[in-house]
Length: 262
Image 1 (cartoon, one colour):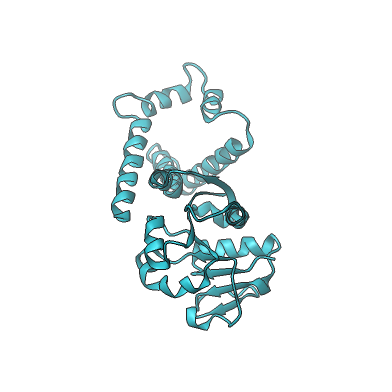
Image 2 (cartoon, rainbow, N blue to C red):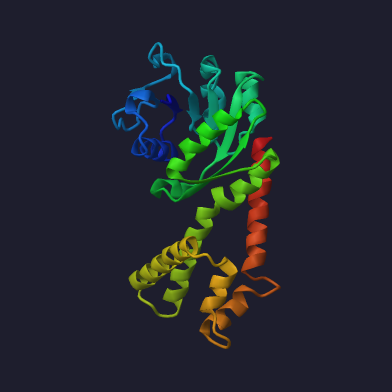
């Protein structure tokens, strides 16, 4: 029996909560701090002072926006030795220690928005105070919305954020520009949008289910001298193709993440 205190229940917090309940977490063992949260049968309170007396969580999941974390966090230090699992982008483990104490067990996590349909991926980094049991607990909770990976070097979390945290936006942009390109070549807008959406989502599902690499799947679609090869000659051009743009985009997002972390 795991007791969970969820602080913040926006889109990601709500996705996690629904996933936990679907996986068998008892609603009676969850308290949500967010007056606008959907109840889903769990106790919902407005603030830290309203948490029921005697509720001692095993894990405190911090799902508020990074810009308000500093003002929200201090009252929750009283719940040590619970493990603190943060999904706030850009906030390093040192930040949480400064508010909760050096003895706090902290896991920093970076999920992404496909968690809403249980197809997310979350990468975590554990502070030195996190033992194997707490690490397993955090992994189990995060697996309710998708895959979970771990890094030992916290410096890699900025790159993780740039690749998978921000990555859904890159995929959605791909669908946007594919539709726009189809319209430019004469397709009706509704059909262009439908083709782009179905192609991107279907290709993603094929990639998920296939044992082939992304490179091999690409090759499978590409006939020598055909239409796909003509398009890829543009997208894979050495002097300004898709790979170079993606390198620059991920590098820019990584730099910004480091700036935000201070």
